[in-house]
Length: 307
Image (tube, rainbow, N blue to C red; front, side, top):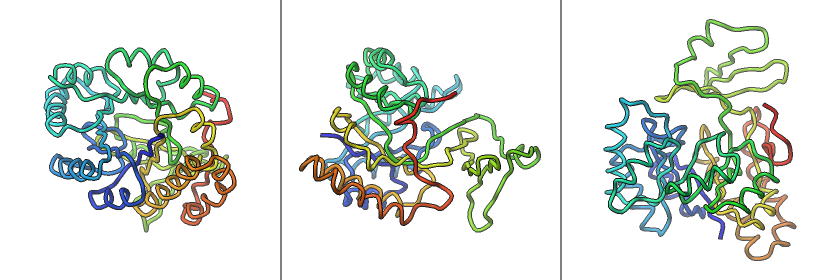
């Protein structure tokens, strides 16, 4: 059965998402995880894991940051802490995480998530041999590539089906430069009623969310992926997990997305033809609350990536 994976923003939000049918949760804090939707310190993480396990759901912790030598003592201590909590999976991109996990008496299974690098099944199987149980595929893959990887992979496969994606990351804090250095193509547009900062591409009339956190500067995609109407080939291929990424979206938005994708999965499991008949109506509640400046698209599902 395909897992519905979501990104809660708070402890209370986890309860809402459990009620709406989520199967698993990505938790974390900026110090160790990249682009987490909600910040969970150690006390909050402990409470979150207890709540999730109480409802027989799964807790995954993002430890997929870019680590330097001076990060390693804190990283090891965090890995020890996660094993004390017995989280269900550790999400990683750096081999240092693998090494510290291997030191544990009862290692927690790993999910490999190296963003744009996860593009073929040899990579997935290589990290499978190092302890990974799942590979999180790059968002830039088309459907044919996704299905080919699934057919040949020895590990579980996770695909993002909703939300924004990261187009650029720098470990430097670059926003100050954006204010002082602008050209005719790219300008900064700020809504003074919101903290959101948008990079405006006049030529394409696109607005790219930009934000800074502990890990540096992130520029996100102008559109949100929405595959609610395109799940059939993924479910037919038995993709192990589909993810709703709620980064920079509200709890209400994530709640509604979770409800609609839960309905889609349940309809498909009941009868794929019923899902095909009703899938177009399922997207309506999300469209009603979708930000005007962020149209839906299908990501790269039906097109080749152009670098």
